[in-house]
Length: 92
Image 1 (cartoon, rainbow, N blue to C red):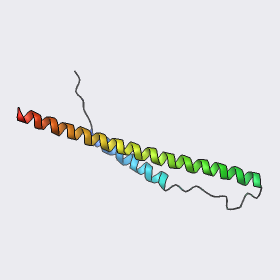
Image 2: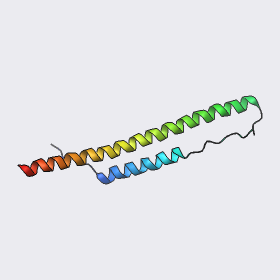
Image 3: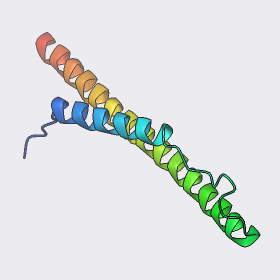
Image 4: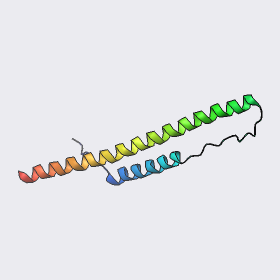
């Protein structure tokens, strides 16, 4: 049977990278038209696009935050299991 190996440094790296992605998406500024377009159809199209972009950015931030938490939780779970097994092995 193969050994299960978990790289804590990889999980830390994933967590940190996803934390950076979350901050990037949270801080993303979606430009406004500032009245530059003039035509109502163009202004409305831009507003629709801007709303979609904002929703996508919020979704990406949420997904990044969730995945970062999964990486953190995985590391904690594996570490706790290792400590529990080590404790049980020491009592035998």
